[in-house]
Every structure is written in C-alpha cells, then in structure tokens.
Figure 1 (cartoon, helix red, strand yellow):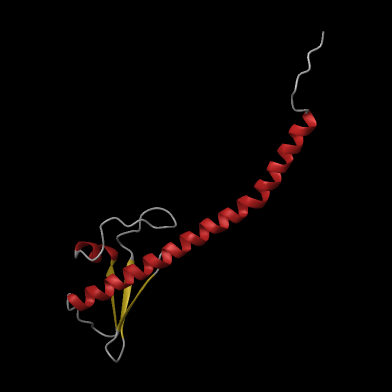
Figure 2 (cartoon, helix red, strand yellow):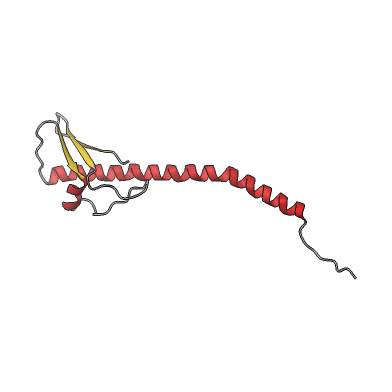
Length: 118
C-alpha cells in the first residue's frame, strides 16, 4: 500500500533557489553601496570633529603662527586632551597618531583646520 506523502518537488525547490539567487544579486550591491556611503559620512563627521578640536587647541593653548600655516599631529590633540586617545577610522582600523592637521590663519585672524582621513 502506498501512503500519500506530501513533499516539495525538485522543480519547486529549484524555483525557490533561483528566486533567492535573484534577490541576492539585486540586494548585495545596494547594501554594499549603503554601507560605503555611511562610512564616508562617518569619516566626514570625524574630519569635522578633528578640525574643530584643532581650532580649539590653537585658540585655548595660544599657539603662535610663524607665517600663515601651522601643523600639528593627532597625537598632539590627544595628549592635550582635546581628543580621546583611540580614534577608530570609519573606513577601517585606527587613525595614526602621526596624522597631520594643517592649520591656516587668514589675514582677518580666522583659523581653519584641514585634515585628510584615509
């Protein structure tokens, strides 16, 4: 006597696998793009934070310029307490303490900072 067994056929399983494959092909590049965009935004925010800390450092520590530019390192800001000691790079790894911040003093006395996050 044969019993009536309910199961999926091979065709049904293959259809499900193909549909999942199509979803993956469409979703993975979009998710990767979203992750990269969020890392770039976080790096931009970190850049602004470091530049702001550098500008405060120059003002509060009364740093004098010999010309229109002055450079400091990330380590200088960390040792002075303007930044925490370990800063994670949103794009991966730690930022080097040797990261250079270039400060520029305009003729009107305004100070701007520029740092590049790798």
